[in-house]
Length: 625
Image 1 (cartoon, rainbow, N blue to C red):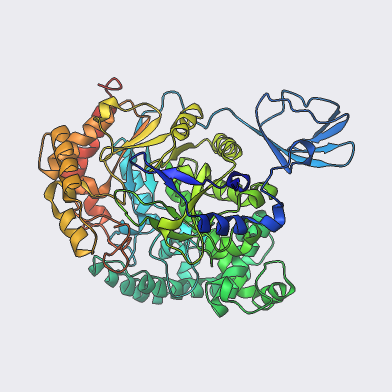
Image 2: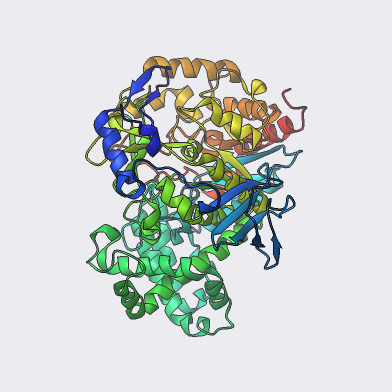
């Protein structure tokens, strides 16, 4: 009998109903090949001690460093010694050199993520693209986020939680889903507010014409990202051309910022420049361009230096506007679970990915065939050999605004459902990840950023996942639609909310329209489950009216023991449509629905004010009241 565990594979899994399900032998064999039998011999055995690429320790641990060693601290200082390493090593990333020349990266992490003991806040969750103002160019932007954030803080909110702002593919064809990014490290410039881009004044009278074209797109509820980007990119190209000379100076803010971002930014911008010529899927590029360190890529970067600089500049101005929004109110960013296999991250860090496999989820009561998210997973051993570098970069990029981070499908740090090439999601299997090391790195980066971390732990979850999260002060996700008891029964280390972007809104659930939406989208409707869910929420809220139910739920969430509580603007406004209908392609406007009200109207809406007041009042009461 094959010991699949040697490759980190699980031979089966427990369904949501607790039934053991065997993984197909053909699936396990295919995944073992992807994990690399040729590379790891009889199995993916992790090297230990001084033969390991790195040690990820908790502060105070003292591993054996050998007869003699020199420890080079992150701050540039060093220490020589022998035997056990010192117990007072500072948090951070250090380097150990043993007397025989072997080198190990020593990561020292805290015992917990950043979590203030008195944290008791409430926040709005919002889809930034849906938050359009009168000044928007067809899609919500970072100025709209800043405007809402300033108002929300004045109403008592402690944060805003945003959808992922990850970079999509460059060029005219934009990706609708923020959870299928080209890069989790860099951002999507479609969220730029053009009038506030440095140098926008160079457009002169043309700025007004472009703005008018962009604002005409606001007449439609469904967002057309391609149309919005065509207009925005016209303006951005011209601003860049007009200001490039001044930005080239070594003393310019852009030049200094670009220098600080180093090789990572250069590689991403190079990918974007090449993708403009050959398409956004690097797997289809001509021979010689398949690896970022190849001579062909170096030649492309030289010949396209202007375009490389342009894409780097787009990231700079996007970061400026994100910082301006974060200055008004802390932002809780969202980290998607994976990336597009043909995108920037999968090209730049390709040696760390298991190309050919796709991430998804096993069959459950909501998706009988399972889910295939079309995302490429990290290769667990190769990621570790690289010192978890791309994972650390993604964490830092999304923690940098300093409020907090939501980790989508946090169970993926323990194990991921991999789907082999040529098969459907139901014929996948679980692959184990070095979760202890990954979680310690999450805690280290959280403490350094002074940002809380929330794990999206919904669906099939192993018991140890939530236990470990609690011990690390990594907040779990409590969602009323799924919880058996009301908010007053929920624990403290959690972000409590009514729903998520993938589930019925309060208006759609209580009004019954979500069932009709599911039918129209071609989904199999579970009427019994929907009615049970509706009855539960109706009993908690003591109302069939979505507006009154929203106020009641906000009050109950606010009074709960949860460290953070939240409600989406869709639920506060009684919007009946979900932002996303999982499992549908082309039958529902996933990630394309704007709010029915402009930002200015949202801020003036009495109903939204009532929900905000209920949150504030609930938070002022004793926890669990």
